[in-house]
Length: 178
Image (cartoon, rainbow, N blue to C red):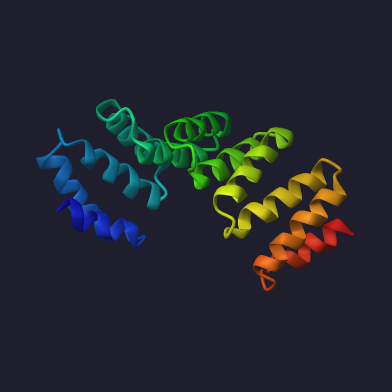
């Protein structure tokens, strides 16, 4: 049941996973994975507050779960609790030093909380860990612009353009740089 629900969640099909997840909650509430699956499904269904509750319950049972902290950070981001989200994603990184998506989300949360200077190194590390993800380049270039660092923004934008010259966000970024 858990594996089937996991398959639906991995495919982004939270609604289809929920009947199985609810059955797990009813029949296997003592199984930590139940609460992780519930939190993931609720995150997918844009229910961040109940997701947070399920994920905190999961993390009481499995205190060193990188995925659990990542999912919790995701629910905090959705609630616009950016400082808490950044700290939660940072905890993911202490558990898994090469977790590029956690670096990306630290940067995103810091940028959203009005800390662009602090967000820059997180995006740089996200790019180092996952150089194929264009979002980090685009957001980093935009941060450099916000910080008045046009030369750095230009360099990062050029890297993004090499990665995917057809990305629809690049013309807007180029316009900002001019």
